[in-house]
Length: 213
Ligand code: GRF
Image 1 (cartoon, rainbow, N blue to C red):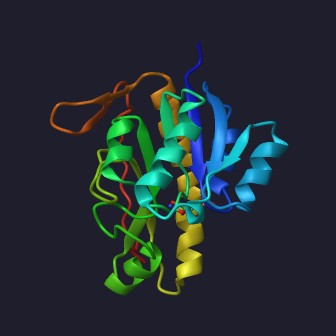
Image 2: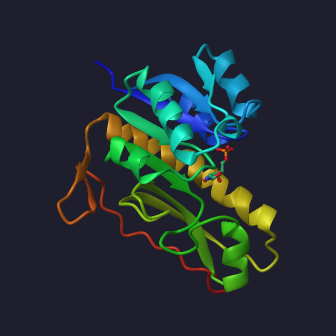
Protein backbone atom coordinates (compact mmCIF):
# COMPACT_ATOMS: atom_id res chain seq x y z
CA UNK A 1 0.00 0.00 0.00
CA UNK A 2 1.27 3.43 -0.93
CA UNK A 3 1.59 5.86 1.99
CA UNK A 4 -0.85 8.76 2.06
CA UNK A 5 -0.11 12.44 2.61
CA UNK A 6 -2.20 15.57 3.02
CA UNK A 7 -0.67 18.85 1.82
CA UNK A 8 -1.43 22.17 3.57
CA UNK A 9 -1.02 25.42 1.61
CA UNK A 10 -1.82 29.11 1.99
CA UNK A 11 -0.89 30.52 -1.40
CA UNK A 12 0.23 29.84 -4.94
CA UNK A 13 1.31 26.28 -4.16
CA UNK A 14 4.41 25.94 -6.32
CA UNK A 15 5.96 23.47 -3.85
CA UNK A 16 2.70 21.51 -3.86
CA UNK A 17 2.75 21.49 -7.67
CA UNK A 18 6.34 20.24 -7.69
CA UNK A 19 5.38 17.43 -5.30
CA UNK A 20 2.42 16.46 -7.49
CA UNK A 21 4.59 16.52 -10.62
CA UNK A 22 7.38 14.42 -9.15
CA UNK A 23 5.67 11.05 -9.56
CA UNK A 24 6.40 10.04 -5.98
CA UNK A 25 5.48 6.59 -4.62
CA UNK A 26 2.74 8.05 -2.41
CA UNK A 27 -0.87 9.20 -2.69
CA UNK A 28 -1.85 12.83 -2.13
CA UNK A 29 -5.17 12.31 -0.36
CA UNK A 30 -6.09 15.99 -0.18
CA UNK A 31 -4.85 19.57 -0.36
CA UNK A 32 -6.18 21.84 2.38
CA UNK A 33 -5.83 25.62 2.61
CA UNK A 34 -6.56 28.17 5.32
CA UNK A 35 -7.06 30.77 2.56
CA UNK A 36 -10.26 30.35 0.54
CA UNK A 37 -8.87 31.43 -2.84
CA UNK A 38 -5.32 30.15 -2.59
CA UNK A 39 -4.05 29.62 -6.14
CA UNK A 40 -2.79 26.16 -5.33
CA UNK A 41 -6.32 24.87 -4.66
CA UNK A 42 -7.34 25.23 -8.29
CA UNK A 43 -4.15 23.60 -9.41
CA UNK A 44 -4.80 20.60 -7.17
CA UNK A 45 -8.46 20.33 -8.15
CA UNK A 46 -7.48 20.38 -11.84
CA UNK A 47 -5.45 17.25 -11.13
CA UNK A 48 -8.41 15.52 -9.50
CA UNK A 49 -7.12 15.91 -5.94
CA UNK A 50 -9.78 16.55 -3.27
CA UNK A 51 -9.43 20.06 -1.81
CA UNK A 52 -10.83 21.71 1.30
CA UNK A 53 -10.69 25.11 2.99
CA UNK A 54 -10.51 25.71 6.74
CA UNK A 55 -10.60 29.50 6.90
CA UNK A 56 -8.74 30.68 10.01
CA UNK A 57 -10.75 33.92 9.99
CA UNK A 58 -13.85 31.95 10.93
CA UNK A 59 -12.29 30.98 14.26
CA UNK A 60 -11.81 33.37 17.17
CA UNK A 61 -9.34 31.06 18.92
CA UNK A 62 -6.24 29.44 17.48
CA UNK A 63 -7.13 26.20 19.29
CA UNK A 64 -10.56 26.04 17.63
CA UNK A 65 -9.00 26.57 14.20
CA UNK A 66 -6.44 23.85 14.87
CA UNK A 67 -9.18 21.42 15.96
CA UNK A 68 -11.14 22.07 12.79
CA UNK A 69 -7.99 21.61 10.74
CA UNK A 70 -7.19 18.33 12.51
CA UNK A 71 -10.71 17.09 11.70
CA UNK A 72 -10.33 18.06 8.03
CA UNK A 73 -6.94 16.35 7.80
CA UNK A 74 -7.76 13.18 9.74
CA UNK A 75 -10.78 12.50 7.52
CA UNK A 76 -8.14 11.36 5.02
CA UNK A 77 -6.10 9.37 7.57
CA UNK A 78 -2.71 10.49 6.20
CA UNK A 79 0.58 9.07 7.48
CA UNK A 80 2.25 12.46 6.90
CA UNK A 81 1.07 16.08 6.84
CA UNK A 82 3.13 18.17 4.42
CA UNK A 83 3.34 21.93 4.95
CA UNK A 84 3.98 23.67 1.64
CA UNK A 85 3.84 27.41 2.24
CA UNK A 86 1.27 27.07 5.03
CA UNK A 87 1.46 30.40 6.83
CA UNK A 88 -0.09 29.67 10.24
CA UNK A 89 1.59 28.91 13.54
CA UNK A 90 0.22 25.81 15.26
CA UNK A 91 -0.75 25.22 18.87
CA UNK A 92 1.36 22.68 20.81
CA UNK A 93 -1.72 20.42 20.74
CA UNK A 94 -1.68 20.34 16.94
CA UNK A 95 2.04 19.60 16.83
CA UNK A 96 1.68 16.86 19.46
CA UNK A 97 -1.18 15.27 17.51
CA UNK A 98 1.10 14.82 14.47
CA UNK A 99 4.36 14.15 16.30
CA UNK A 100 6.95 12.96 13.72
CA UNK A 101 4.23 13.15 11.05
CA UNK A 102 4.44 16.89 10.27
CA UNK A 103 7.05 18.10 7.78
CA UNK A 104 7.84 21.57 6.45
CA UNK A 105 10.06 23.41 4.00
CA UNK A 106 11.60 26.66 5.15
CA UNK A 107 13.36 29.07 2.77
CA UNK A 108 16.65 29.42 4.67
CA UNK A 109 19.50 27.28 5.91
CA UNK A 110 18.15 26.66 9.41
CA UNK A 111 18.90 27.44 12.16
CA UNK A 112 19.74 30.72 10.41
CA UNK A 113 16.85 33.03 9.61
CA UNK A 114 13.73 31.44 11.09
CA UNK A 115 10.45 33.30 10.64
CA UNK A 116 9.38 35.55 7.78
CA UNK A 117 11.26 37.45 5.04
CA UNK A 118 14.16 35.01 5.05
CA UNK A 119 15.72 36.33 1.83
CA UNK A 120 15.64 39.87 3.19
CA UNK A 121 17.24 38.58 6.39
CA UNK A 122 19.96 36.80 4.42
CA UNK A 123 20.77 39.90 2.35
CA UNK A 124 20.84 42.09 5.46
CA UNK A 125 23.21 39.67 7.21
CA UNK A 126 25.52 39.67 4.19
CA UNK A 127 25.85 35.88 4.02
CA UNK A 128 27.35 34.48 0.82
CA UNK A 129 25.46 31.20 0.99
CA UNK A 130 21.71 30.87 1.55
CA UNK A 131 19.24 28.08 0.86
CA UNK A 132 16.34 26.02 2.13
CA UNK A 133 15.64 23.31 4.68
CA UNK A 134 13.20 20.41 4.88
CA UNK A 135 12.53 19.60 8.53
CA UNK A 136 10.06 17.92 10.84
CA UNK A 137 7.94 20.32 12.88
CA UNK A 138 8.25 20.74 16.64
CA UNK A 139 6.91 23.35 19.03
CA UNK A 140 9.84 25.65 18.41
CA UNK A 141 9.15 27.64 15.24
CA UNK A 142 11.39 26.58 12.32
CA UNK A 143 13.60 24.43 14.54
CA UNK A 144 12.64 20.75 14.14
CA UNK A 145 14.85 17.82 13.08
CA UNK A 146 16.44 18.54 9.71
CA UNK A 147 15.98 16.10 6.82
CA UNK A 148 17.76 17.89 3.98
CA UNK A 149 19.15 21.25 2.94
CA UNK A 150 20.06 22.91 -0.34
CA UNK A 151 22.47 25.83 -0.68
CA UNK A 152 22.70 28.60 -3.24
CA UNK A 153 25.20 31.44 -3.62
CA UNK A 154 24.19 35.00 -2.79
CA UNK A 155 25.33 37.26 -5.63
CA UNK A 156 26.41 40.90 -5.45
CA UNK A 157 23.49 42.15 -7.49
CA UNK A 158 20.86 40.04 -5.71
CA UNK A 159 17.51 41.43 -4.70
CA UNK A 160 15.06 39.65 -2.43
CA UNK A 161 13.15 38.51 -5.53
CA UNK A 162 16.19 37.20 -7.41
CA UNK A 163 17.53 35.36 -4.38
CA UNK A 164 14.08 34.01 -3.51
CA UNK A 165 13.61 32.61 -7.01
CA UNK A 166 17.00 30.87 -6.84
CA UNK A 167 16.08 29.29 -3.51
CA UNK A 168 12.59 28.32 -4.71
CA UNK A 169 14.02 26.30 -7.59
CA UNK A 170 15.96 24.29 -5.00
CA UNK A 171 12.90 23.93 -2.77
CA UNK A 172 11.00 22.19 -5.55
CA UNK A 173 13.72 19.58 -6.04
CA UNK A 174 14.61 19.12 -2.38
CA UNK A 175 11.07 18.69 -1.02
CA UNK A 176 10.16 16.05 -3.59
CA UNK A 177 13.39 14.21 -2.86
CA UNK A 178 12.83 14.26 0.91
CA UNK A 179 9.27 13.01 0.49
CA UNK A 180 10.46 10.17 -1.72
CA UNK A 181 12.88 9.10 1.02
CA UNK A 182 10.01 9.28 3.51
CA UNK A 183 7.72 7.24 1.25
CA UNK A 184 10.46 4.64 0.87
CA UNK A 185 10.67 4.39 4.67
CA UNK A 186 14.23 5.70 4.77
CA UNK A 187 13.86 8.53 7.29
CA UNK A 188 14.74 7.39 10.78
CA UNK A 189 14.06 9.57 13.82
CA UNK A 190 17.06 9.00 16.08
CA UNK A 191 16.90 9.23 19.84
CA UNK A 192 19.15 12.28 19.84
CA UNK A 193 16.49 14.14 17.85
CA UNK A 194 18.35 14.03 14.56
CA UNK A 195 17.22 12.35 11.36
CA UNK A 196 19.19 9.56 9.77
CA UNK A 197 18.60 8.88 6.07
CA UNK A 198 19.12 5.25 5.25
CA UNK A 199 21.24 4.74 2.15
CA UNK A 200 21.93 8.42 1.62
CA UNK A 201 24.64 8.79 -0.99
CA UNK A 202 27.91 10.23 0.24
CA UNK A 203 28.84 13.57 -1.25
CA UNK A 204 32.15 15.33 -1.12
CA UNK A 205 30.93 18.27 -3.14
CA UNK A 206 31.37 21.82 -1.91
CA UNK A 207 29.90 25.20 -2.72
CA UNK A 208 32.23 28.16 -2.39
CA UNK A 209 30.67 31.55 -2.71
CA UNK A 210 32.02 33.49 -4.42
CA UNK A 211 34.21 31.20 -6.51
CA UNK A 212 37.76 32.37 -7.17
CA UNK A 213 37.96 34.67 -10.18
C1 GRF B 1 8.07 28.83 -0.06
O1 GRF B 1 9.20 29.62 -0.20
C2 GRF B 1 8.13 28.07 1.23
O2 GRF B 1 9.40 27.66 1.57
C3 GRF B 1 7.64 29.12 2.18
O3 GRF B 1 6.59 29.77 1.52
C4 GRF B 1 6.80 29.67 0.12
C5 GRF B 1 5.61 29.02 -0.46
O4 GRF B 1 5.63 29.01 -1.86
N1 GRF B 1 7.31 28.55 3.46
P1 GRF B 1 4.63 28.08 -2.68
O5 GRF B 1 3.22 28.41 -2.19
O6 GRF B 1 5.02 26.67 -2.45
O7 GRF B 1 4.82 28.52 -4.10
